Image (cartoon, rainbow, N blue to C red; front, side, top):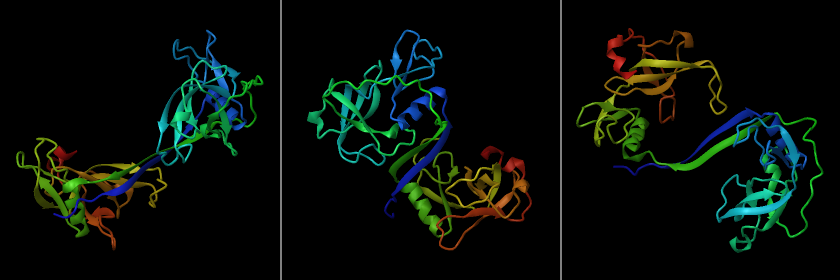
Length: 313
C-alpha cells in the first residue's frame, strides 16, 4: 500500500457585501480616525454599532462618537499569531470598553508578554498609517496611562462614505484523503477509475471513502468502473470563477460511471451547453500530464434509458 497522501489546502471565498447606514458611518469613521457607536432608546451606547437593539429589536440610528481610550474587560494571550492577524508577534486578544461606550470591542493588544496584560488595564487605539474604511484601520490597542481622550462630538455624517466591503474568508489546513481516496488518486494517475465495493450491500462507490455510506461497514475490495458513464443531472454555470480559466456558460454534471452506484461530478465539454441532457452518455477527456480528467464529452452512443440511472439522481 503506498503512503497515504497529504497536502496543504486553502479554501478562500472573497465575500462582497453592502453595508447599511449605521455600518457605513462606523467604517467611514474608522477611515477618518473617528470612533462611532449607536445609542439605544434607553441610553446605552453600543460599540461596534448595530442597526437593531439586541434587547428590544428596535431600529436604532442615533450615532454618537466615543473616545479612543478604554478599559480591558477580558483577554486571552495569543502566543502564535497566524496569517492575516493584526500583529506578527505574540499579542493579546482583548475586549475593550471604549470611554463613552457600554459594550466592548474585540481587537488585538500589543503587549510585551502575558504578564503585562490584566483585566481593568487602560488602553488606547493605535491607528493604521493607511486607512481604507475597515476594522483593520485600528492597527491594534496599546497600553495607556494618560487621561481619557475626549471625543469631539462628530455627527456621523461623512462625504464619500463607505457603501460596501469585501470580506476575504480563508481557511488553511493540511488535507489527507485517507487510504481509500489515496488509492483512487493513484489509479487516476494511470487513467483508471477505481471504486470500492461494500461487502454487505455490494454497491460500488466512487470516489471511495473507506466505508459504505449506506451500511456503515468498512470497504476494501477495489473495483474498476467506467470510464464511460451517464449524465444523471446537471446545472449550467453562468458566473465565471476567478480561479478557473473556463468561459461561461458551461455545464457541471453528476455522472454515473458504468459499474458504479454513486454519481461523481465533473464538467461537460465537447457539446453546446444547451444540448446537455439527462441520460447523455459521456467519456473522460485527459490532457497531457494531468492526474485527473479535464472534462467529459459525449460518446455518440444513444442516450441511456431513465430507468437505468433513476436511482442515482
